[in-house]
Image (cartoon, rainbow, N blue to C red; front, side):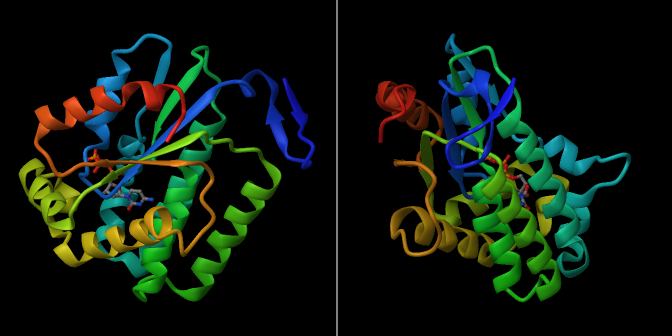
Length: 228
Ligand code: DCP
């Protein structure tokens, strides 16, 4: 069932009392490892990022196209990402806790912003995407209770990217990861850029897999209670 909140935003009633945790961080910062770790916990629904959709929408690959020609295809990919993120935020769950990879906020404040600031997204494309984003966030309640920021160095992410060899990402230079890192730091650490929709828990994410899992174990109670 749907209704309107006191701010006049559309809300899904059944979702009101659920805890929503978003995992944010650079490309290859270990978000998937984090989600896999928590997916083994009962009472949590884990929603992984729909990268497979971004690589195949009705036979097209907007992720690959964006890396080949960001000026032409950036808006195509980011419009679709905004839709798929909104779909995830609004999907109903039976579990009391929902954990998501990234959020509609990170998509706009980090990736769209980066395309625009680096001169790769035309101003008109940025304006249209921004209008869409503002309409969505002003009219639809998108509650987030905790942001877990996997803070990693761009160099380490670059090494991991090279190892995992995702076809579309082979051309990503270190500078791209540095720019994404800087935007994340300004947003979630320095708090100098955009509105932060929830408290932030920072986890250092440069370590190897075993140590990362240990960190998730150590922060488990905090994360599951939605505290930073
Ligand atoms: N991407 C993008 N714009 C967004 C979100 C993601 O261009 N708004 C791109 C960056 C990557 C791909 O989509 O090339 C997948 O992104 P993620 O970093 O979110 O997913 P990973 O699988 O790399 O995360 P991790 O390795 O941390 O699990």
